[in-house]
Image (cartoon, rainbow, N blue to C red; front, side):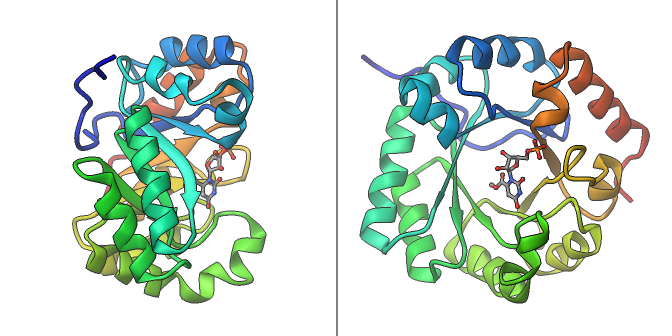
Amino acid sequence: MALPLLPATMRIEHRLIVALDVTDGGRAKSIAHAVVDRVDALKVSWPLVLAVGRGIVKDLAPLAYVLCDFKVADIPNTSRLVVEQAVAAGASGVICHGFAGEDSVRACVEGAGRADVFVVTELSHPGGQEYTAKFAEEFARIAVRAGAAGIIAPATRPDRVRTLRAIVGTKRILSPGVGAQGGRAADAIAAGADAVIVGRSIIESRDPGDAAERIAGEIRRHPAT
Ligand code: O7M
């Protein structure tokens, strides 16, 4: 069956991406419908895909830009194959790790074709400072050299977003770590993030649409400096 025409590049309007970290396909779809007018993308990751299958990507794709967070980090050939399959499933964007090296990131970009690739630099949790933080600037340079659409940088450490922005220029920066992990959306945006990625503060809310609107409202009230 032909796939719907997918958005080729992420359009940033709300500066908010929801992480659909649930394992029930019906719940994922109902949250997606509730938030779709307030977010720029739906992030889908392993818990959901392993629970319900890759068909969920195709189901969500007609609604919005689907960003497959598979954190690809393998040898180039395997990485390319994974990214190709994500795009074939309906992803408009795929996330890979920078630590696998420039050849692997390049293979992801090649495998993605017209879809976007985003490269993880420094992970947002405390353990992200043990290793990833030490090389985050290099991972950001790899993202630029490999022609990625952008990077992932921690909203829990806005100073790091600022540093990484200086490296990636006009590439996209998507920042997770808002709410449950302690970061603030407005701080990440002020530091240079294009959009924040939010999971639990939205998906565990009794009213995900309202929760997304509150975060989008916070971002609107504190425009980027
Ligand atoms: O808002 P949360 O903490 O419930 O969820 C955050 C989401 O962002 C969740 O899906 C994580 O897997 C993801 N994430 C991080 O939290 N930290 C990172 O450093 C990187 C990501 C991510 O999205 O990487 C692409």
